[in-house]
Length: 64
Image 1 (cartoon, rainbow, N blue to C red):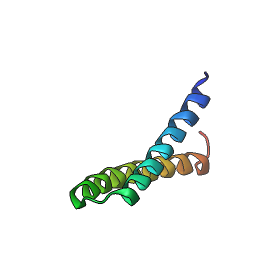
Image 2 (image 1 turned 180 degrees about the vertical axis):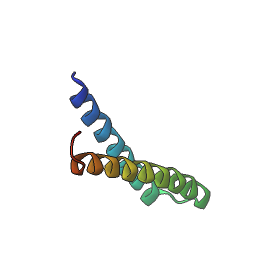
Image 3 (image 1 turned 135 degrees about the vertical axis):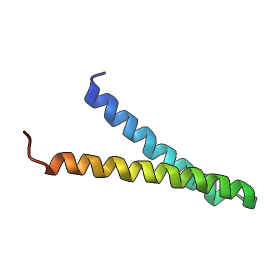
């Protein structure tokens, strides 16, 4: 697998993890469990947003 494919697969895995956390949050019945899931989800979303911003900046910046 080439580096581009590896990066795409890693990104897809991160998105699947976010979707899984959302599903877990929806199914959670225990408030403490929900809070733990929401903490993980917030961290995963923060990381995802940071990565998307970097990716967008790299696309928008002219190459040197």
